[in-house]
Image (tube, rainbow, N blue to C red; front, top):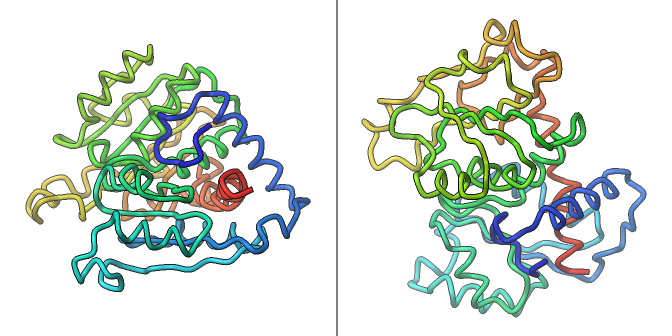
Length: 299
């Protein structure tokens, strides 16, 4: 297993299973609360974040470590013309690990080439979000074996980094993916090709109602306004799908509805009280999963 955590594609199934097992150990609250004492984590978030950032901070605090942070590009020396490479070189001298969120795909990989401490990718543009994928898998595994499941992916699959990472990970478990995306937001052809090269069955659908009754997991993502080149392009596809209690009337009893959050109207609040709604539990699972990651790279 590499010391940097950049892409889920860098990991074998054995690596992923090991991290999920470790997350389960941290979820018991019987862990060493001083395990990362004297360690310092740098949080470089150049895009807005609530769950990812706070769960990394919480994970670090629960292991006895401390965090330092940059909140935005505007609050960093990047506005003075400093390159990301130089920022990473400098912060490597301050901290024992760096968590990076950046709007540009490939930024985390670039950062890892200049860092002298481990880099964890907390989301790079439309690229990857490996820690989110691990908590997605962890949440699924709490209710069912991952092997061979049917997963519906609904929403922005073109720019959705969480969907990209999860699809690659599921290809290691023999899962079948059913994609449902508005026009123009389908899974990129290169990702689709690679998944099929890995032996994964990927089936495209026009409407979620055509397949929802056969799913074990329905993974919903929002349409990301910030990824669109202009407002008109966004409004052409905004509000094109919505999960409601009526849609879930005839689904399998064990169906899980997941969402990386935040949501922007794509899941009706009436779904929140149904047993299928697991997205808040999914969010909570970010803490033990990120504790496992931080412990792994800084132990």
